[in-house]
Image 1 (tube, helix red, strand yellow):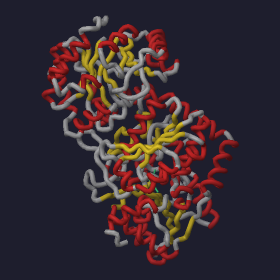
Image 2 (cartoon, rainbow over the protein chains, first blue to last red):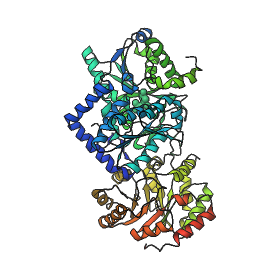
Image 3 (cartoon, protein in one colour):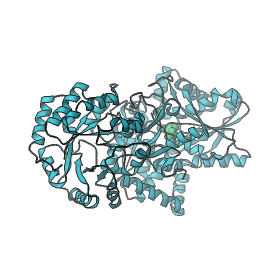
Image 4 (cartoon, chains in turn cyan, purple):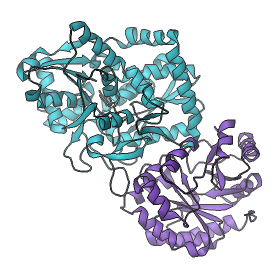
Amino acid sequence: MRAHNGFYGEYGGQFVTETLVPALDRLEEEFLNFLRSDEDRERLDGYMRDYAGRPTPVYFAENISKKYGFDLYLKREDLLHTGAHKINNTIGQALLARFMGKGRVIAETGAGQHGVATATAAALFGLRCTVYMGRTDAERQLPNVRRMKLLGAQVSVVEIGQMTLKDAVSAAYRDWVASVQDTHYIIGSAIGPHPFPEIVAHFQSVIGDESRVFFSRRGGLPDAVIACVGGGSNSIGMFRGFLDDRGVELVGVEAGGRSPLPGDNAASIGCGIRGIFQGCLSYVIQNGTFQIEDVHSVSAGLDYAGTGPEHAHLHDTGRVRYTSVDDAAALTAFHELTRLEGIIPALESSHAVGYALRQAESLAGKTVLVNLSGRGDKDMDIIDAMTGGES
Amino acid sequence: MKGIYILGGYPDRGRFVQSMRAVAEAGADFIEVGIPFNDPVADGPVIAGAAMETANSGITVEEILEDMESCRRSGVRLFAMTYCNIIYRYGIARFSERCRGLLEGVILADLPNRMHSFFYERGLDLPIIPFVTLESRGDDIVSASYSPGSFVYFIGLRGITGATADFESTEMTEQVVRVRQHTGKRVVIGFGIKNGDDARRALALADGFVVGTEAVRRQGDLPALREYLEGLLQTVPAGDH
Ligand SMILES: Cc1ncc(COP(=O)(O)O)c(C=O)c1O
């Protein structure tokens, strides 16, 4: 574990209602048992290999590389079952839920990818499942709502606040305090109270581990590793593979939205300050009266006012550099990757690609690894709306 | 110990102050003033809706504290109930300084007992009221007894404010007995108390109760609030103080 007493430096903690404390302790205990059990870990590895499709390839994007003047490699999490990295975490946590004897799982979802991955794990393991999703997101990511329902999950549409990810997380907590006896809350990102950030980071660290093995075998680590940061699960999973490799520059890309003005973006580290939000102390976008600020991103999965506590710590230590890419640049990157490589990326992942394209000059001649956290099938309606159907 | 929760600044500052006065006049022993936060995860639709609306209206913590001060003369004991971010952002030591003599303690809905040290270590010099819940294990109950808080806040249901406590459940009664045995502190039942009947049963079982949702619901309509409080507080026996 990288967390000490539930904290990463000064960030993290367990800021939740007392009712949930025994469940968090039980979860931590089960997670530690899991880490100690070769049999349990092999079981998860088996599902990852035969069911989810791991290891995912690292692909050299030759056409983009030629056009932009640096060597771009993509970690293809988009090729996983259900279409994003989220399944790495949901299978792991669903196993923990089974070990704890819980018959029901709940989840929040923004882009719907975590919701689909949770509904999938629930179907696989015979668990009842409810997914909370804000109305705004349910409308902009409709294909994923349909998938969750087909998979047998109950989709509960949340109609408070901005009706996005923050509100879905709150609704899931409200469910959990009432249902904690038989329900496990599968948090979808490296956020929330300890031990969730640690558990999610652990299950996602397979991304960075595989990537590092790929480059080691090839004879040299990349110069830069880039991932998009919402709550921070795909990015922490990727970064953990390279944290000790001081020569590898790590870059986390937040959602720059429409502008740096309050309400226009979701760059928690770039535009937020320290605060206690949805279970942990981290960077949070908030206003002068200590309230959580509205946020915006074209991508539902990055449209969140907080970020994981380990990222806050990695920002303060300087090990990872956090920056942002706005809606327009993410969209440009989406089209570039689609046309030049024949890969339709998720709008979330497009932010990470967008950073690399924007930095082409400073990256010239370098080897760059971007985590392609998911595929963009879910984003067709947004793309149509943004381009007037002319894409 | 009969307590009423009132949401600060709701529906506006004037009616908030009048609501506090009405509660003091109706004979409550203490008032918990909610300082609104716009992610009220422990609250059900009535309090959460009111809190989000008020939080987003631009009202400041300072304004709510000033309004609470105007009620000091009534002699009613005051607690603040809020979420961690409000006090963290105000400045923990600064909040403590500002509220000395005004507040008897703070109740933080998203701060479990084991995290109290986070606030004390950063300069909070006001007691944080500890929670015991239906999920609390033996050790959790014992650890609540080390708190400097003047009572234990007992959450007698699994859920959020606005749900209904089940006084028929032996789980709840047995847990209250355990808390009294192991902490030596007075036990106040919060969450799920709606009417005089619930209040009577709470006082028969424990040392006090807090009513929240049903009071907040009436903060915009003072005559209705007064009538409700009268029915609630005057039909139940005076608690020992
Ligand atoms: C494809 C994809 N990438 C990234 C994210 C952002 O989440 P995180 O920062 O936890 O990886 C999401 C969230 O929905 C997603 O679906």
